[in-house]
Length: 187
Ligand SMILES: [Fe+2]
Ligand SMILES: [Fe+2]
Image (cartoon, rainbow, N blue to C red; front, top):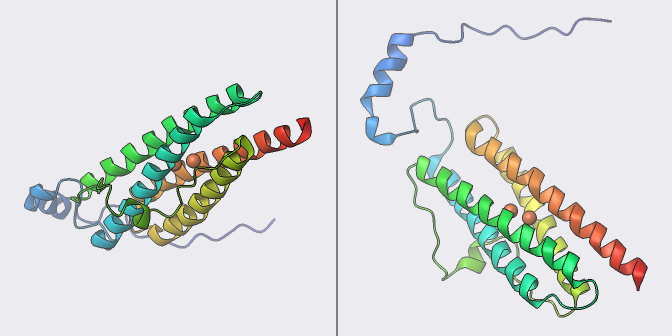
């Protein structure tokens, strides 16, 4: 097998004194140092859209949790509640990252749906609700994939956060698909 040639890299830290000097220079910037390569304003705006997406998902799953009724409701309601709690966790982590970037997390209910990528659909039956949640998860998966690609190596911390959330949304979508299949079979 032919060995893969790795591109040669320069020394990892070229000038530790310089790094120390810059770190002291703009203390008020907190976690944002001069090596931050992304367009901070844009990243904050994107993260605020993701925050809105998560908040809308919390509300939708809560509504579905309280409205779930029928023979299969218990198992499905439990899943709705679990998802609502996890979406809230995502919202919190995104808001925290926004503040690390010296931004302000947008929790304003006005315009929440416009900032959100996914929609708030109430759904009438259990199957409706599951379908709408699956659609919302698929939208989140698509847009978070976009965000991960956009962040690339310019903001690895935000990228990693969004990758972790993305993996969790994929689990949600898979849960919903399984529940829909189970309901469909038993009808
Ligand atoms: Fe989420
Ligand atoms: Fe989700």
